[in-house]
Amino acid sequence: MTMTMSPRTAAGTLTDMLSRSSASRPDAVFCTYLPDAVGGRAESLGLAALDRRARQVAALLRTRVQRGDRVLLAFPNGPEFAAAFFGCLYAGAVAVPVPAPRGPVRASLYAAVEADCRPALVCTVPGWLPLFASRPGSRSGAVVAIGPPTGRSAEPVPAEASDLAYVQYTPRSFGPPRAVPVTHGAALAGLSAFTAETRLGARDRLVGWLPAHDGTGLTTQVLLPLFTGMSTWALPSGTVARDPRRWLAAMSQQRATTGVIPPGALDLPHGTDYVQRCALQLGRWRLVLAPEQGVDGERLDAFIGAYAVAGFWPDAVVRVPSPRPSRPVARRS
Image (cartoon, rainbow, N blue to C red; front, side, top):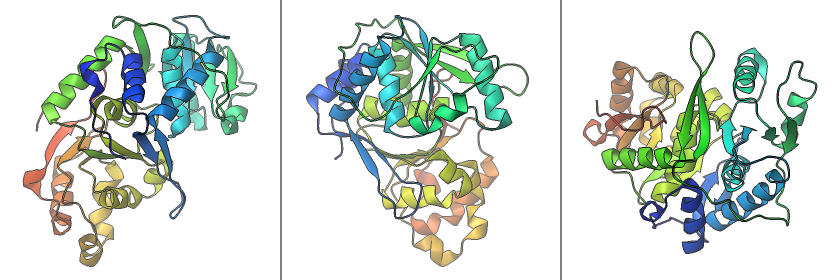
């Protein structure tokens, strides 16, 4: 179901935005999570369900953390991350999205974030608990799994626009990741500026793929859909990294109007023929968002030209950087 409300007019905090949206349109779909396997079953998360699950997470957290404590969130794309993120805010804690410590690069980033913010708690999915067992030198508190919904729930802790909502860590080529603290008010102001610049709204349709800990992924796949009421679909990030054709197929199937283009998608014209490109429906795609690392303009122009046969016309495209806390306003190229 497509959401038509715009909760931004009433919300003063991110918690207000969710609680008021779920009260006014409880049956509206917040996001549909697409499966890893082709032909698998998608999972839709409604606004009322998200609010309910966030309150249940808040009830768990309030027995373990104090207001203002940092809570690391290590999750794959899915409803569990959205519930844990808003559950942190409902509990008065500060959400800190991080990658799971898998592989040397992500483990190093996780360790750097952990050392910098000294979290009171780590939340993850049950299947990832072994990744956190017996980590030498760990400075985190307990690790808890956010599993199926429980019966206990808690009312949201009152928040102000000036309260810290989350901390976004951005990897750097040299040195530790950069921490960007984001207040409720700053997050809403950034969303307002970005949507005013891009004219994104409730009628738009977005297909996401970025990991939950990515700043652009958090904004485009969690905050922006709630702020605008746009219809949103999210693919597992690993799926798109392995095969960016899955993302392009979803853009076509869902008649998407916007999305963050995966860098690997720019090479797709070399691996497809004219007939395959003609089978896609990209005529509604009007806005290209660039990922954190940006995209090469010439390769993007070649991509647009190759998929003109699918309705993707250059004059319908406005290239803008994706929103993130340190750069909330879009700039047209």
